[in-house]
Amino acid sequence: METSALQKARAAYQPKLPKALQGAVKIQEGEPTQSVDNHEEIKNLFPNTYGMPLVEFVPADKENALRINVGVILSGGQAPGGHNVISGLFDQLKKLNPENRLYGFQMGPGGLVDHKYLEITPELMDKYRNTGGFDMIGSGRTKLEEVEQFEKGLEIIRELDIKALVIIGGDDSNTNACVLAEYYAAKNYGIQVIGCPKTIDGDLKNAQIETSFGFDTATKTYSEIIGNIERDCNSARKYWHFIKLMGRSASHIALECALQTQPNICLISEEIEARDLTLNEIVEDIARIVARRAEDGRNYGVVLIPEGLIEFVPAIGRLIQELNDLLAAHGDEYKDLDHQAQRKYIISHLSEANRATYETLPRGVARQLSLDRDPHGNVQVSLIETEKLLSDMVAMKLETWAEEGRFVGKFSALHHFLGYEGRCAAPSNFDADYCYALGTSAVQLIANGKTGYMAIVQNTTATSDEWIAGGVPITMMMNMERRNGEMKPVIRKALVELDGAPFKAFASQRDEWATKTSYIYPGPVQYWGPSEVCDQTTRTLALEQGK
Image (cartoon, rainbow, N blue to C red; front, side):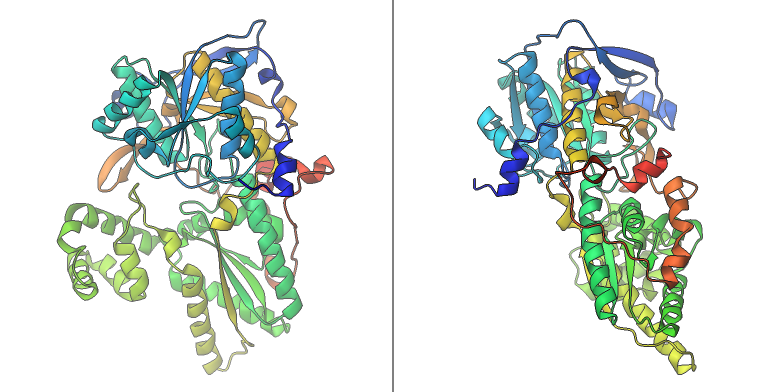
């Protein structure tokens, strides 16, 4: 594998660890826990892994020289830092006992079921330290939820003498990890399962998990590009740039990028839902700002749009819920019909209110909402060109106003979707350190006999020495939600809180950003130099922790 000068230099970077993980480690257990909601249902579904205590690591006098083999799985979409979780696992396993082995299951959970794996050797590991992407072993979106899968996975686990699995993933993947941990515990198979919190979306977050890994790097990468677009926008002064940002269920990425770059407009899906805005009202709000800037001779601007926006428009959200149920119950009856017949079938089976909403949507958007769910039952909103839909509707609104004699200036739109550009960036110093600590913590959870836990690192706005490492029972984060027409146990997603400090900071400034040109150009992620430049956390994390 060819390496760039940057990769060679980054390979030499030794991630920093919290004090408690730098030497021998023991655990300190807290109080028993309970799920965030639906306590009895979750307890009944997870009798062997429910109610376990929170765990914190503290220094010990003697290291546990445990002999153990571990398997690791990368699950779901890529996020910067995944390779550093693996390097933390690898280094800590070898530190406990040089005979310990780490196996990577290839292309996600499917690798476990299909027995596709490789042993991670020192030579292989050294090629991937502090690099982005998941290409060391690949990732996939296979759901682990069937007994047949669990038993098939057990065959290769036994063959390789693996005693613990580490699943690196988001909320859905860690839900699956919890289901697997419960199954193996119920069967007394002696196989531990530990999760690690990954997602650039930032929605795997709660009182115990301060941030999911990858969010820091991805938002800094997107903000660099947005800043570059803003600089171009402020130079040419003739285009409105509509930029859709990754973030299917929550607007954390859009909000963080807005705080970093100060665009003219940033839509926050959670606010749109809370205000019960229609698509037309959203369009009118944007058009008003476009017209207001035109009055000052500014026929240009930047709009940030979270990719999941369409689901949060309340009328469309209600439509999607009914479409999900319809697809689960009757999808086989219409999914192979031609487009016209599909549309006719769906319209005839919708309630009156949802039928009206469906018929007003552009046909391409309506079709996308009707079909093609991902393996977790979610609408694939990244395929919906919301940025073009909104700019087209804004153009039509401005045209109508112009015909009524209102001054609207000139409106020319350009479109961007920032998604894949950020998922595999070389991790920032924060994510490199954070992920290495998560991997190290996962091994310590295994060494201390834990299963059904997620590795966590807290106090992350302090220097890495002062970070607090430990574990949280995955059941503590779960509740019951409707998925594919059925109630399922899932980790509750963390959405943007409208009374939270990050949103309040944004809301207090956005009116000024709308009319003035207040752009900030963050530039690229920095790896060497002053700590205040290279090791800074996200604005979101700093504001949440009062920094």
